[in-house]
Amino acid sequence: TELPVTLLGTGAMGRALAGTLLDDDRPVTLWNRTPGRAADLLARGATGAATVREAVAAGGPVVVCLLDHAAVHATLDPVADALRGRTIVNLTTSTPAEARELASWSAERGIAHLDGAIMATPPMIGGPGAQILYSGSRTVFDAHRELLDRWAASTYDGADAGRASLLDLAMLAAMYSMFTGFLHGAAMVRAGGVTGVEFAERATPFLAAMTESFAASAAVLDSGDFSAPPQSLDWTGAALDTIGRASREQGVDPAPVDLLRALVRQQIDAGHGADDLGRIAEGLRVGRSAA
Ligand code: NDP
Image 1 (cartoon, protein in one colour):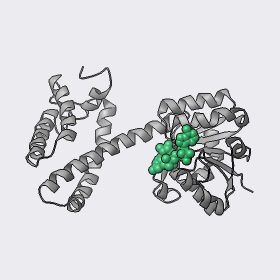
Image 2: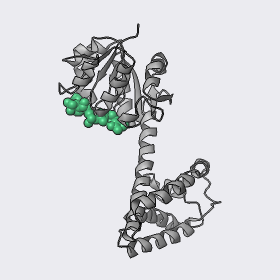
Image 3: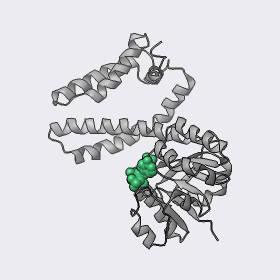
Image 4: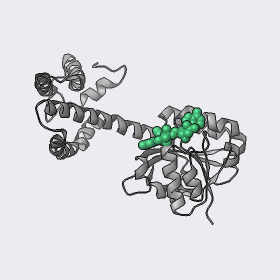
């Protein structure tokens, strides 16, 4: 018989996690701060708990999927005594430092802790595209691998509990800048009478092809040698000026491109105009600006 899973938090993501387990007829005990938000899951066989303490008493791993780090502490701190000797899998989005803090908090109280970063939207949970990164206790990861794999393809990224969050939030930083770029380009073409849908048809394969260069540019970053670029910072700066002028011609604020233009200028001003674009990543590191 399978261990029951306790799930704290039945927001959009918690509901998806619980739903997948109920599909497998796995025993699930649910708690949510605001009661009455999981009626459908209870109708499908989940057990509702009135308090966190009651939910934890069901046994098995305690999966936490709440709004943020503060919500996790607000929920777990009062039941720390009941969690001694137990396992928590925290799927709440946290910063790396917050994840490490929860790891120390857990270790001090005799609680095994695994931190997960969900790279998926709720409807993707349990399906082929979902990915969850984990770091923290390898023992917990191995012991509950079957459960974790049910939700998403799971990878273990190391004992540093902050590692999964770091990778997650860095990927999201990259994603949001890419979305901003896409929306900026779409605003430009729409001001010129091209529909957003037409733009997406052109931009999607182009941007996908461009992402193929990530590996080469990452190798340059890792080597720290920016001296043999495919295109220099001087060249890129001129290209960005042209893009900025085209944007203004369309009546579209070139702010997203200006951000990159400023980073490029910073490196050119510091004498690195002949170098690779990757140098701007050095400029972003606080305290190392264009030295
Ligand atoms: P929701 O806003 O749908 O749910 C938030 C949950 O947190 C609710 O259960 C809410 O309870 C609870 N909560 C908020 N504050 C507190 C508190 N102080 N004490 C106790 N419980 C609290 O968010 P999601 O379910 O979408 O997200 C949950 C986590 O999953 C987040 O960390 C999010 O970043 C992460 N995630 C979500 C993704 C998504 O696409 N949705 C993608 C990847 C990660 P109540 O019902 O009482 O308000």
